Length: 198
Image 1 (tube, rainbow, N blue to C red):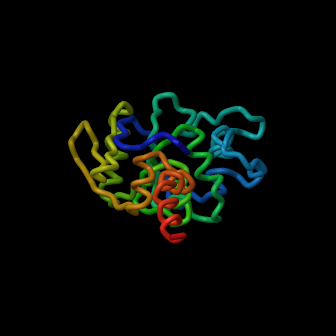
Image 2: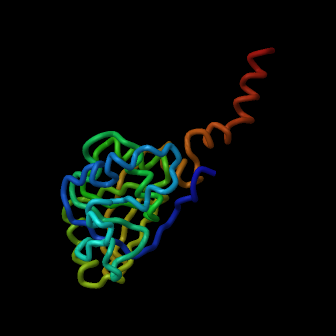
Image 3: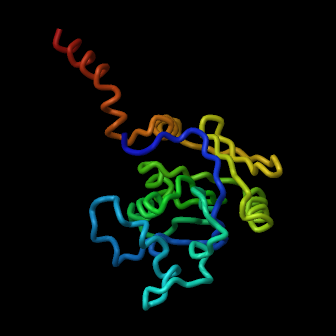
């Protein structure tokens, strides 16, 4: 499989309430030389995480030990800018399996879905509720149910729904990328091809 199956994710979350976070901020261009998906997590938000001498910036949320988890909660218009798929690779490689925002750039959204990161777009009002819950208690857990397409703040029970392309949803539930999907249909493809030969 291309990545782990995604069904229900229950996790604490990391808050990044910044709007218009673009792909160059997610993974700076100087780190795009590699062609494999490994190692990009080390440089996720590199210029925000580290000083020029490579010491961590204490003020940045990923360097704050009270916040952790597999869910990144971003501000509006997350993943804008260039189409680099490395941004989604970096998010995945760091350990995030879901990014929540009130609006995603389309290309970033699709790149995430291609590598097993679920982009969950919520209303602006629900986004603020998530941030408030996390800031009130950094151990707040969020549940993302892909099958039901719901996201829930477990401490309050407040819930929102999200949309996802049915093909991408099925792939994520099975842990498939596009090639895995085609391989899963190998028998049907062979039967179809054989029928054409008759």
